[in-house]
Length: 228
Image (cartoon, rainbow, N blue to C red; front, side):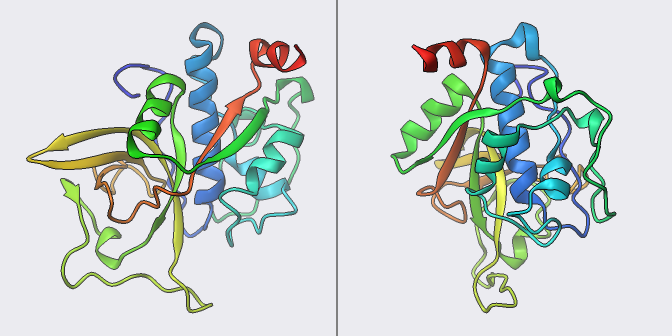
């Protein structure tokens, strides 16, 4: 996506000490999908994940949220542009903006892709980035580059509930190197992490490929088609 659609992916976020990957991945994916659906109108679009963090009562702000349930809010309320409610990270931001309600953009629908690898690639190629959960490993936290696969002594990160920590990322592409197939992901740990904020992750490793989520942008064409 970075090569084929310049202007459809902004710089990666740095969430800091704020568990907001669920909001960042959703906003990043939807922004890119608007941009790819109508590049002339939405080039450079950047929708606000902070709105979800500050305003969505079904989510827990910087304490996390649902990778899938967050889309219900985006369909109902829409997201305003980043400039209207800038990302605040761990700093608390109030749910208010001076931007007009008409500036918000919505997802017309969302769905779970439980399909083969090639279908996920086709979806990214034709319509744009998708959201994927990953199971965090300790060595992924210090990833610096190359194709990531968990090392022999890699350990899963465990939350307070005793279960593996799940983190949301945006799948923006794929590739193959020396026989290893990989996803290209946009993360939310700043540009000093990984490959300028991105990572190449071996397919079949930590990405949950059975739980890919896509949100369809409510473009004028999509709204008209839905009405028909």
